[in-house]
Length: 74
Image (cartoon, rainbow, N blue to C red; front, side, top):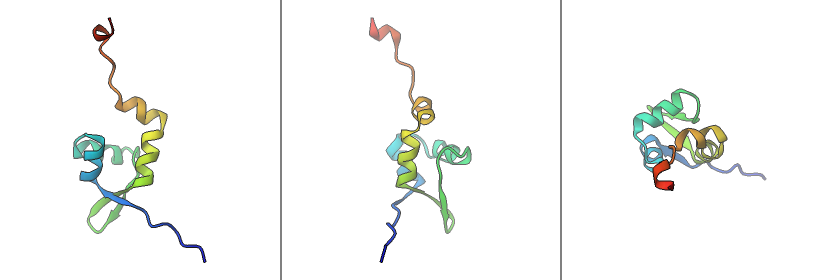
């Protein structure tokens, strides 16, 4: 018998802490479809695999990085 792996679901607060952003930012990512989430009862949950996918996508990594201070490089 094959048993499906149980997803590791995280709250918006946990995701915000992991990414070091506000909860509002996480909700925006979900609303824009950049981060997948499921509704459990009245709350949104993010599967850990979806968070990993978000972090490894080129567009996500470029969007979350800030430009380096050029003066610091000199």
